[in-house]
Length: 236
Image (cartoon, rainbow, N blue to C red):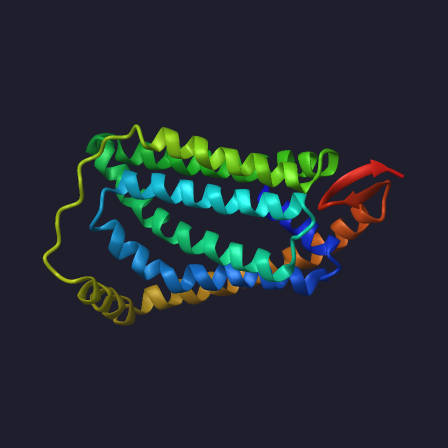
């Protein structure tokens, strides 16, 4: 929901496809840099608490985006900075999610639990853009991003009710764990191959997204809808 709305806003500022690319690049780079630290933290702190805190943080970031869009102050630089902050925060959440499922699901139901999680993700990724696009086209990007912020706070409230065993306390230091993780990645060629493949796929997705989002948003901006204060305004 939010990605399409932000693309619409960036194009509305006149930054064009390069502006969208800058926002997406900031998001991707922050995630790559912070992800190793997120995995180490997830092995040391209560995972449900990590996820709940991250959801609140991302919710606050999204509220900031909403205010910028609604007041007409959104620009490539501040949207890129917020996208980077969003990705950095999410880097702590994903490793915690991976470790949380085995901690709360019985061993004999772990496969079904993982399947259910993946199914729900794919459904949301399929339905979400359609719902978000409808909201952006009818009410404006500020409403789309704002509703996304509400969803993060609702998610945090639900996750806070989960009671899971705490991860076993590690005796090694944070730095030692980072070094150990890097050594493990470096010594396994299949991990490098997976990372390179993922980098190529994500980069290709970004290029395609920027191209088609640019064309689609330009059509929307030049159609029967006008833009005013960062949201779709009255019909001309």
